[in-house]
Image (tube, rainbow, N blue to C red):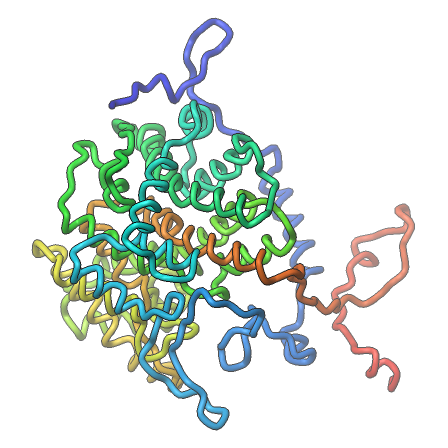
Length: 493
């Protein structure tokens, strides 16, 4: 049904409607500049100190691999093997509970069915479901898709958000208030909460986007109630489209994206956030909201948007995005920080673990190629192919780094979403909808096996000094940007 503009407005004392007001910060730009200067002086840490104290920045080892922080049975991500202490590249493997994701995808294709719900079961419960178990699980998810009464109007419509990820995090936190037993962290109760969130996040995402369309883009908004017989991928496409129509091929392509984004080990930023918060004993809604916040970041779940921004800018600045020489020259500019966002990054290329290939990127590239329709998408696909093929050699020639670089999952996922008519606003929220299954599995495993709060160490490198009475303080004597000197060095001096 179509929702009238009035639902996005509040009533004043005289019954008149008025648009939601914006909060304007009382802090002036000049004040912020001065305050930031204070921070820059006092928060600066000499990069040599990280090496001096053996700090593994980003919880990464010197070779780029992650610090071993825990054990899991949920997922394995392999992109190299160790031979006599040396890291040797190989084609990537992604396994859910020991099963190769390629086999899972192939099995679903062979039987011409959807697979995300099966993968969610596999991740949470540890084994493939029987037909009876899968059907019952789908029925439970369908029953849980409905949001609490008045939730859409009270929690989503009344405070439109310019970013859907923030609205999803807020909505998840709000669900705490509707739960009769929100703080119980028994496995049974957490399982209930996680299944409900897997079912409800697609609806929250769709409704939040419709509200944004109306409030920020001044376009029509439509709310379609979910149909219980539809799977997650079908439900998403139905709720996003005004006519509610989609093809089976479209739904299965989106289902593939959901499968491939559902889980990627315990060390990725958002899943580690799930683990960290879970180890504190907090509730499911708080842990999930934190994970959504982590996934929003452009260094994590927001990377496919950066790919689109990069390729769009490239198309504006060169004559032909399918010309190998022109694309190569632009990639060189990207790496030299002369083009794009000047970070030196080629978005969609490179991964912390995968070296020769990312199995998710391989599957998405193959699916995108088969789904291609129209000259525009064919040209964009060729542009991405050139980026994938040319970047490793160009990067190597400029940086002198022999480390293999491959396309990652973000390179082709944005193109697929565009072909499905999914707006850029939902690129990362779709990642959230899918990854909720993995977060659920890791939260339950952490509760079952962790038994200790996660608490890494931070070395303090501030020099001690005496307290200065307020009236004696000046800009000079309160600043202490001195280089830290280790105690053993002080003893020698």
